[in-house]
Amino acid sequence: VNKSFPIHPFHQGKETSDPENGRQCPFFDELHAVFTERARTMQQQLLESESGPSVKKKLKRPSGDLSSEDSDDEEDGSGDSGDEKPIRSRKRKIADKRQQSQRMAEKSRTSISSIHELLQDFLVQQQRMDIQWHEMMERRSQERIVFEQEWRQSMQKLEQERLMLEHTWMEREEQRRMREEARAEKRDALLTTLLNKVLQEDL
Image (cartoon, rainbow, N blue to C red; front, side, top):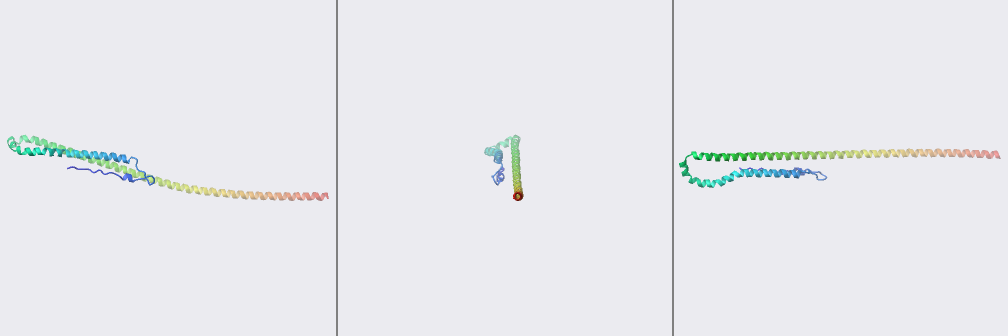
């Protein structure tokens, strides 16, 4: 009985993409092509190995059927001992070919199973990497938001300090100007008093 093992293409890796750049695994297509070609070759070898004995049997049957009627009389005369060895040899060859086909089928199933497991592991690793990448991008986005908030707060604080310093400087300048005006008024008053006293003495 011919047993075929379907090759299931794995497209899950292509669906995991980056929301911004459509990023996917850079080697997924190459790995998928290698594993698919290998599975197809093994399936073809299995079909050829299983179809070989059946084709040979079909080719040998007509001659056997045609000669069976003619050899009935000869079998009666030759006895059973001469026919046992070819029959046993034929049965042994058929059994050996059947065992060989079973071994190849088992080996093919094992290889296909290992390929499926390898692809599944690859897809799981790809999904894990995508999850880690999204988590990293989310973490960086949160860090950027926190940094921007801290920067704005720092700028606001610096602006407030600058305004306070400017206000303090303006107050000091105003006080200095008032002191200079007061000194000038006192000086003018003193000069006026001295000038009046000198004028009175001259008179």
